[in-house]
Length: 198
Image (cartoon, rainbow, N blue to C red; front, top):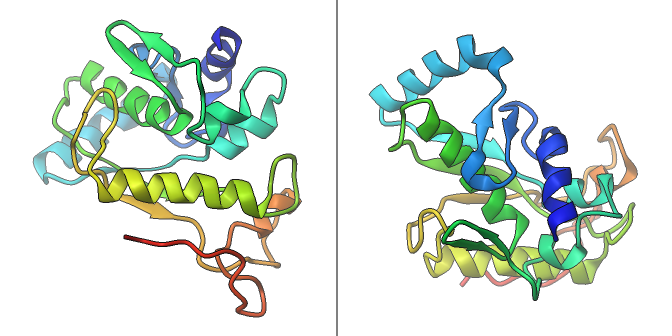
């Protein structure tokens, strides 16, 4: 597990690139100093307007970008060997990524800003470990955690706002082949898998 976390520290850009957060361990979360002149005024605005920090979090992308060091089970909420960060225990990549952002905001002096995950999901095809089974496993666990207000290790039992990506596959999407296959529904409108939202 240690190698997974070392990899995250140097490769978090695949996870939440626009924020450029260093994330290993999550409690060491910091923004890249290069963006400080932009991020601090943004955080001040969000704090003053009581607005959330919105972030896309894709454990799948971290997994496929370093298959040797990121465990599939950790990305899919199924790890048997959690990562210890002080008194907090991390059992999945989604929580670790969100909490790294929360710690980074706190480090800049903004502890009360809510983190909203505006996109997360798992592809059903087009890449390593991209399958209907894994997409259902990942998205089902995300829904379960949101519905039950599980929160994250840093903010336990706190309501979490999360948006799944995506409703439909997108055959015109650029990038890696898996980018086209995040939909709960396929290109023709057929249901790819049955996901309950309760």
